[in-house]
Image (cartoon, rainbow over all chains, first blue to last red; front, side, top):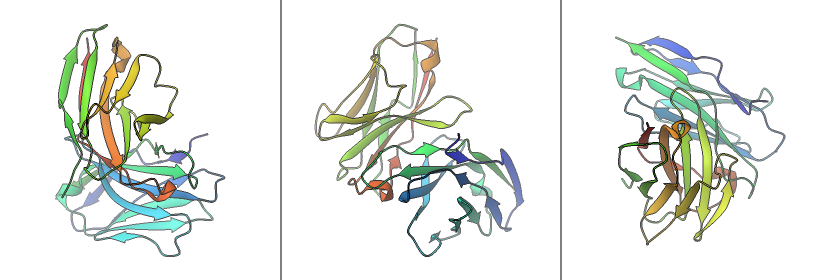
Length: 116
Length: 116
């Protein structure tokens, strides 16, 4: 079974509008962290935002926020006021366990295109 | 802002040749990682490294791969006898300490390896 599922291969949004990128995850571990990374066409991986499984509040970082619904095992990324520079691939990733595995498990990504 | 750097940005090699990919992690970070991304696919974990030894590796990380921290700043991935299927983007990442699932891994810009 896929640990991280991103069901939207591509998304389009108008500049200045908000967009939600979906991510669902699968784990039986009560302790886990969820991460979002941005990959522009140049290829680098840029960390955006983190949400821990025990965090009571949804994470926010500037224009990025995470809609964390633990019961549904979803951690959707919300980008507000989209900019042309937001056009990129976006990857959701998970890391499981307190003191456990060190690896990040990634989803297949969503390609976001921001239209002027 | 400190960042992970990688050299070279691109490498073309002949099948069967050895390649060494180099990384300089963020200076106060103690955990280092290699990931790879085959074109159009998800990012996959290869190996993690701490205190001068491998702490975790994936099934992909077989005997043709090795990692080393030859000095206080560099972290290298060696592929002994490259295969066509090794063509991918290779990312180095580092994290400050190992506090479990909460620790953010910061990625370098990647080395795009093409095996002919």
